[in-house]
Image (cartoon, rainbow, N blue to C red; front, side, top):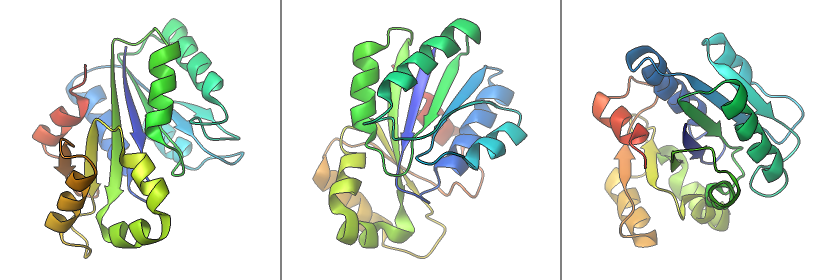
Length: 197
């Protein structure tokens, strides 16, 4: 079982991106996918969207998996492995979570996965605004990610080159993929996302 852990601020396009990746894995590669959705509140909207797309969804409500309900996430992953035996588990974290914290906990306490990748989605349209207002959160979400997806390149926003330069100032070795999740992702991008060790 391989795990893809998705982070990114609210409205960055996590759900739209995950739907495309899950569709690729299930229809093109014919692999079994389970999605875990983490929401802060007591009910979610995205889980219905995933389920309506024919995907198996497990929801974790009531807190952020990076700081409050990590043990619930680990138990859920163990249960999914035992009862569903999927090829992939895709975790969509709340928009306020720090993916690297959750990744560290999973790597330390979960022994059921064969490969793991942390992906953070960055909103091109709101990059400058988010960095100005929520810099510690944005940097915390980006730091430690295996892949950054720079989304919404079809919309008006900060120059892509400027954002890429600023991302590489955070980590010069950071791998960045540029997309518009509102349009079909290319095979090269899909393969880059699901390539994990």
